Length: 203
Image (cartoon, rainbow, N blue to C red; front, top):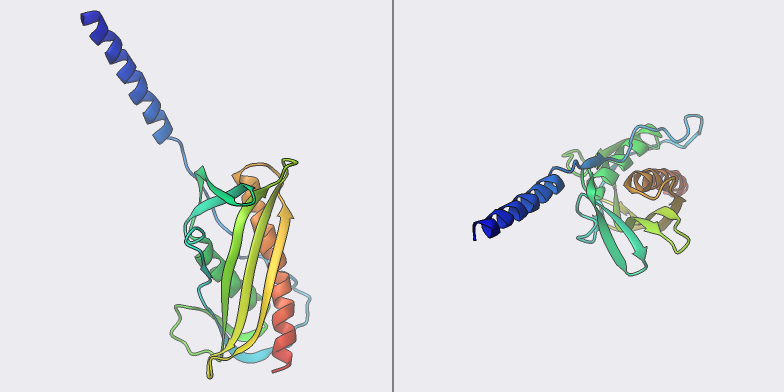
């Protein structure tokens, strides 16, 4: 009997030790970079208006700090030991504010929380934001966002556009996925600048 208790005790200690090892696994925290100016030499028409960036909308799955990946078309999973520093919604909002201010397309670009008045507002819906794996075991950063440029005075949609980018990842892990998503967001930023530049000239 004592021998059985001794064996049970050892098994319990081993089990608890394994749980402790898992819980002590460090979490890698990643973020999106905001500081890169896309093209310092580009000449863009200055618009004497203030643009407010609304917090991007998305599904509940995206509104978390989990880094999502997919190995099948209809399934999404999250890395266990890798996280975003904030939700993609808030990070993309800050990215857009920084990007558009750096490119000097508007008099000012302000976040949704600002109390300042603005003539226009840029709303968006994040439809996809994840790392994709294909059958050839290749990895990509996938971003799909639908933008709406809105006149604040009458709340009418001035223009809308859907952007979709897919960039190869350098490695088949969270770090490679994050870098690919960063690159995909910068590509989308370039296209967004061109779109806003074209439509602002017509107004």
